[in-house]
Image (cartoon, rainbow, N blue to C red; front, side, top):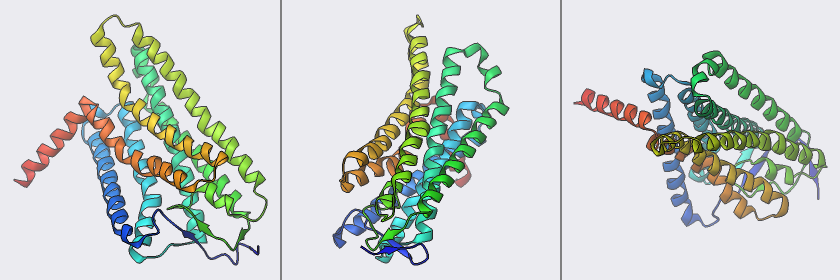
Length: 313
């Protein structure tokens, strides 16, 4: 099969989910609705955190950062998919594909590091409550966010440069709704061994490492909660972590499932479905999970809506 170098390569084809044209309007409506709910929900979390001084705490500072990243994360993939459906085109330019890979990798790693930082915050709050304000000072919170950004940017740059070195064949069809890193690497005609090594080593270090930290934090949290004599105290302590546990479980189960399954199966349909869960569904559910299970956030959002209704009247 003829190889195409980077100067000759113009575009990839994103096959999406349904070949049946009749289903495209349904898919367009579904993903547009999910995207709008995701953006609106996460913007409300950010607005609530900024507007209420009671939420000017490390936990909500990290949550607002996670909401911002989730908006950017979804915006990396869904708008292009919607545009392709609307224009009845499956094309994405080579530069656009590399750009999408770069920002997708950057934001997914940033998501992972932020939920890890949030797990550490909950560990300090529950296991060392008397030292919480001393440990989680504003400059430490800012430093944790800065380090997360720096690591994510460098990792995304590495993966982008690794893809740029590849040559591709005539078959440029990606069985996905966005330029997913593994799928693009599998299309290459040149040797991809080094790319695969980098992908799986990074998955272990930058995916497995944070997961280990999260599991360690929650093992300590569970031990501390079990030591609380009051049933009401145990419930209150657990309720502060339940939202975070739900988000982490959903995100890690689907994202790790995609990368582990890609190593043992070539079933692109199941991989695409799992990718939708952590790229589209999880960012949409995050605001609901955190707001429904958090009394402080609930109260702030209610006050915001009541204030807006009074202004309208």
